[in-house]
Image 1 (cartoon, rainbow, N blue to C red):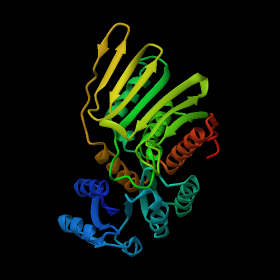
Image 2 (image 1 turned 45 degrees about the vertical axis):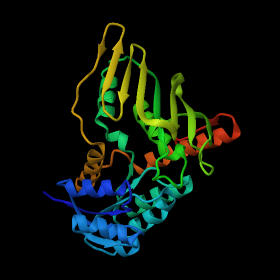
Image 3 (image 1 turned 135 degrees about the horizontal axis):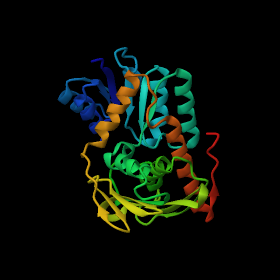
Image 4 (image 1 turned 180 degrees about the horizontal axis):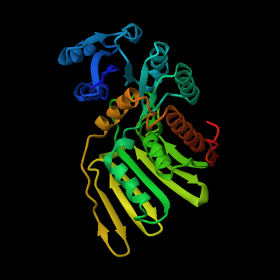
Length: 319
């Protein structure tokens, strides 16, 4: 089997998971890790018997590397992506694609010019529960989709230091409802605020309006003392609820309540496997750079809506 030589840039809380999975996948060969904390990089490198780097510019000089995943802080995504793309390596950038829409546009444009694969790390797209829910929806199990509600709440994650809850948590649900509705929202209204964290918002309630009077409601916060990751879909003939964590689905219609079975699998493993296969087979990734750009545009529009206290119109057709 042909394999992809990969490196991970940023081996903190989440980057370590990328390292583990790339080491486990038959499609990938973990070559190196990189972190500005060289001691941390060396500790991880020792476990997996790979090279450790402090500077990603030096890492990108390694000709053996085919692709890299960026798991650094959001504010560094643009800089790190530029280094990887300049070296003509394929790239996966953890969400959000960048800290600003302008930086995200530059990343997408650069990847297009370099003719390299760019994928954004929206892990829930690869959640088997989400995939099963989309299958049931396509088969008309709850009729025509009318609305969706996503709830992603927990206590403040210590790994976060440079973005608020909208770009870290709510952006997952933004991407999921775009995928489920298979279209872009046209209006956003949001209310966000700070209760415990002075620099960034730690709670948000958001409504996205789609064509044909369809809506999505998103709640995200870093205030709830326990973790909830839920998605509810309302259709013309029933409802469907998904627990992202257990991947369990409950389907309710007028006549019955069902719990469809499907195999539990680790979403990150499915995501990184798809990334590798898309490169090896030269096929488009399921989550493109444009998907990441659109999600960020919506997230920034939600923050603008909250700041202005009014709805914000969206025009994503030309993105």
